[in-house]
Image 1: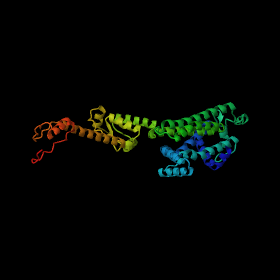
Image 2: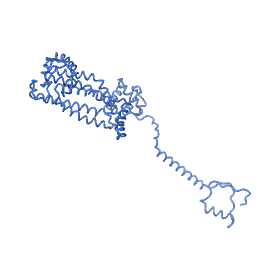
Image 3: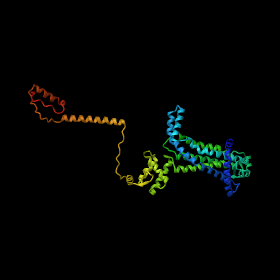
Image 4: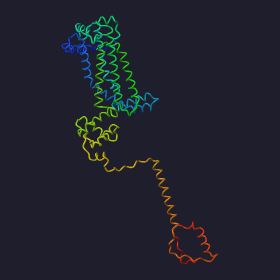
Length: 426
């Protein structure tokens, strides 16, 4: 750790200078040699750094959401080019370029904060050794070396030997109790921050390997912090605990005010917005109007939370407009009360197989109707005006026809018979 911290020695001077400036302020209040003065100076350093990193945090949130939205497409690319890793990488880079997504953006706050973390570790290591560093002269180093937080010197570590702890003017039991409590709080805050992200601010309708990976990190990160924490000075533990608490609060605010579409956090947010809209009869906040406007613009692409929100507005007699406002609607009230005229439902589009089956059925019905019509025409009495021939004597030529007609009535010619020519003798 000392070797890694020495790589960031170039930034130790700015970090030590910031700590000294905050120490002047808190030293005038609590005393220059107290743990409160030096501890709050480290906390103020964290707050200053995190305020400067807010733009990177916003990029991290956007990058994380973009990565979540791209997971189905990424999975399809992986399955399509499973045997060609090079083509798979090319398609992934092409997808990132088309969507403007940078996978490293989600790690920007941690990467940007690392130099300050290692620089602070380097400063505290020199304080423990009693060596001046950066903007801290020997007097300030001695003052910081004697400062204690709940009985533990800010330069002491959990794994320090009893002799080293005694040289700092403390007992090993006090140091280990304080460091153990800080390590537990640091790991717990890291776990809760990741769990808050996974349980509330993830689109639960999309199941991707990315979600499984995040769940694994939710358990791995606290273990890593716990193992590394035993080698951190008390001052570094204060720094890391403060930054974890800041991250947790910042993330909580983002989740409550700008949740991921389709997540539980969005459902809670829309419920609060619905309650405010129905109570006041309007959308007051400009930010809330922007949310409603985005939901209306989605149309049929709304997720389940957004559809429930629009439906609840209609039941309350309100209709969301394209500009993000809501107005009272008589049609919405009537529809909610069940008094509105029933809407004409469009017939469902049939599949090709259903259309073919319907055509065959219609053809069969038409054939059956034609057969029935022909049978009915055969059974009707003939009303022809032609003169029926007299019944000839037995054995005559017409008698045989009569006999055939009477015996084969079922084989009579269809329709009217053609009248005989007047010149015909038969």
